[in-house]
Length: 148
Image 1 (cartoon, rainbow, N blue to C red):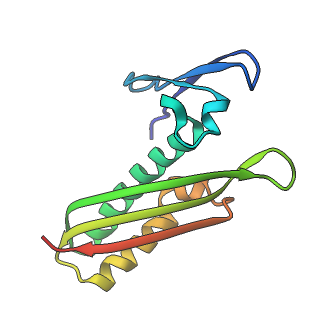
Image 2 (image 1 turned 180 degrees about the horizontal axis):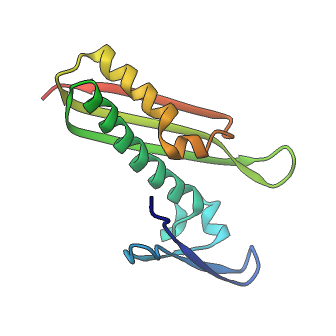
């Protein structure tokens, strides 16, 4: 399996500094970041590690769920997945990711609601990004099968 690379260039201190994160493997973009904007509600037009983790988790989860549905003989038409990643204080000092809330809505042929929910829960537990994030205090899933 391939190795993927991202690169960050940071200038200055934590409060007055800023940086750029580059998606090096794909070359798809470079995104600005800063700590004050990281800790604001709206992000101020920059990205942050939590948003990048949310993107990685929602993408990985969607692929894993698609695979598991296929193994069950179902045909995914569309999966809409979001991940909310929460940064909070770490009792040991500093910050940590305290919660991740996954939400998926799927239009899938050949499976009932119970089968979809079972596959959705299994995907939460088995996607590689979920496994990498096992130290997060709380990881929840809100899943529903929708009809066309």
